[in-house]
Amino acid sequence: MSDIRSTVIELLGQLGSSREARQYLKQFSKVDQTRFAVVKVGGAVLRDHLDALAGALAFLQQLGLTPIVLHGAGPQLDEAMAAAGLPVEKHDGLRVTTEAVMAVVRPVIYQANAALVDALEARGVRARGILHGVFKSHLANPEKLGLVGEIDEVDLAPLSGAIGAGALPVLACLGESASGQMMNINADLAAQELVWAVQPHKVIFLTETGGLLDETGRIISAINLSSDYETLMGAEWVHSGMALKLAAIKTMLDRLPPETSVSITSAAKLTRELFTHTGAGTLIRRGEKIEWLPTLPPDRASQVEALLAQSFGRTLRSDWLTGREVAGWLVAESNRAAALIVHGANGIPYLDKIVVTPEAQGEGLGAALWSALRARCPAMYWRSRVSNPINAWYHQQAEMSYRAGEWVIFAIGLDDWSAFGPLVIDAQARDPGWVSEP
Ligand code: ARG
Image 1 (cartoon, rainbow, N blue to C red):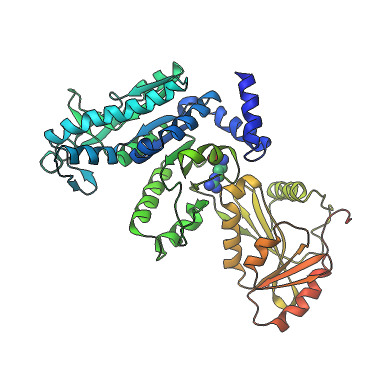
Image 2 (image 1 turned 45 degrees about the vertical axis):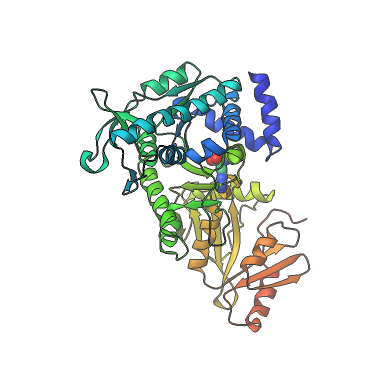
């Protein structure tokens, strides 16, 4: 096992760095394996990407990670109903499930479940299909919805039993009453109740698109609910389907520990999403607050200074803050992202230092810090060494820039170029604060 593990870490290193991969593997292995992850797989993924899905899950199992897999079968059900000549009828997004519909639905769900279990076992992965005994339910509204169940209780015993036996649990969205009446359960609602009961470290949605899309159709890498939720919900381009999804994820995360994150990705990109900082898909977290503090309390100051030193590969002089006219710090609760603002020339704030750990960057904390900075300082300027790889990004953000020797000076929010000149001169002359400048 440990041989496989180290080979696999080497391989993972090709996606990002093996250090990154090892860090995430350690993080995911630390939690009790019944609590590593709940993976919700849409019916379409199961139907159209079974191979990629089984491959990604087999890979996790080889690493000793056992996610709980929950799958839907929506498109398969629609097809089967059409073939049986039954109309698909929905009420508030729930599939009306008459006795006749249940007769069609039940075997289709069994088949979808067996297809994944078979695909996993064909790869040598022990898997256990779980069709009953997890979702205890009652009929939601028998007159309108027929055999649609509403979950009262989630029994985790069949899942921990499977995991304890080294088998990957593959769970279908079927519930039953105390007397054994079988019910159809909406997959999104089943996922929500399951996640609340399991309290997993990661919640993973495998979809066809592999993430939430922005207004240009590109995948949004990370969403920090505490800073982005209101803005997104108010944005014109966020259509109702996406707003619903976001609201559901917020409700879900509100009842989970703060470190839990949701990843929306595709079967093919799951490994990259899990084992790199930047990921591949959309990472959603409750997020942390970014505070504005006139000075940092000593414990936070030493953490932030250590982070600066590590990230710039230099040491700060012990007196580096003396003589700096500090306006304040913007700093994330975890101290993994921080910016120092000082009073600059002509009353314009100067962005003196900014730092974000790579991991926090992947969580979207860098973007959150930047927007907090923009809100606080409508006008500001900063400098960066010409060789700094971040400059491409700074050029996108800045409205003005000027290269002066080893520095590029950037500015935002100035009225005109004549205001920029004095700032360029000022920025070049500033004390970097490091022990020695090469
Ligand atoms: N690998 C980490 C995780 O799964 C970070 C992923 C970042 N993903 C992203 N889409 N920004 O928790």
